[in-house]
Amino acid sequence: MDYTKQEYLDYVQKKSPNSKLFRNMLFAFVIGGLICTVGQGFGEIYKSVFGLNEESVKTAVPITMVFLGALFTGLNLYHKLAKYAGAGTLVPITGFANAVVSPAIEFKREGYVLGLAAKMFTIAGPVLVYGINASILLGLIYYVLGFGK
Amino acid sequence: MDIFMRFFNAFWVGGAFCAVAQILIDKTKLTPARILVAFVVTGVILSGLGLYDKIIEIGGAGATVPIIGFGNTLAKGVFKGIEERGFLGVFTGGVTGAAGGIAASVFFGFLAALLFNPKQK
View 1 (spheres, each protein chain N blue to C red):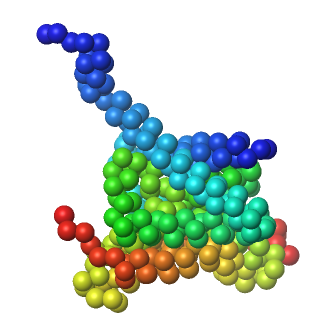
View 2 (view 1 turned 45 degrees about the vertical axis):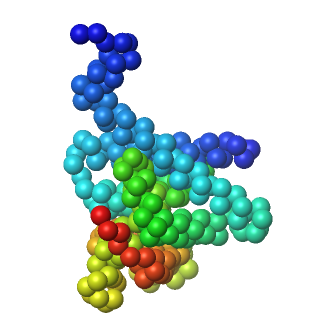
View 3 (view 1 turned 180 degrees about the vertical axis):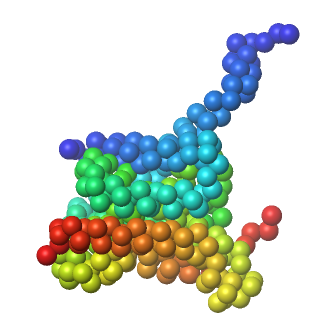
């Protein structure tokens, strides 16, 4: 068989099991990194143009990213990006927004209460349950150990 | 730190969190929902140990935009709540701190689901 060097490299690439992981990681890294860079961009604008302090920026940026995540999910663009990005579109808070919106849209036909509204929390619900419980547990430890007043 | 470095650090810190999650997806078959849960709880723990502030200092939005930063917001909220209200703060602090993200998800999520319809496959 005649292989050009490139074809051979492609062949090896396809055969080696770790290359898929590496490729997925690279896509996740680059796209996830870019989403965070966009967030940084909004942060810089909020700080320098609108004069928000550090604390407010930390609130305003996630709100902005949630808005964008919801919008791009609605426009059916987020899942196209997710096909390549994997965890790169899951881990940023835009992915949380995506997890809220996408089942909500899908189950809208089952009604606005038990369809749309209930399904918003299919994935967001567990995140809130474990996140909030972890924070309360942390608070209890912190309080009992006497760090609070 | 000049602005280019802030963008660069946001990129690689945020990207690194996503790459770690990708390894978990590919190697452990953890579902995306479990990864989100694990990351939020990890964020709460790292913040409780006082480690996450350092990561934010370096990564900026690279540390606050990933869902692990949501755990940080919850944890910081609890600390602040306890400082201001004592024991009650254990319960009120976390959600208060994370109120922006939670309310935005509920509001924008609801709006988006109202306005857009499922795509025909």
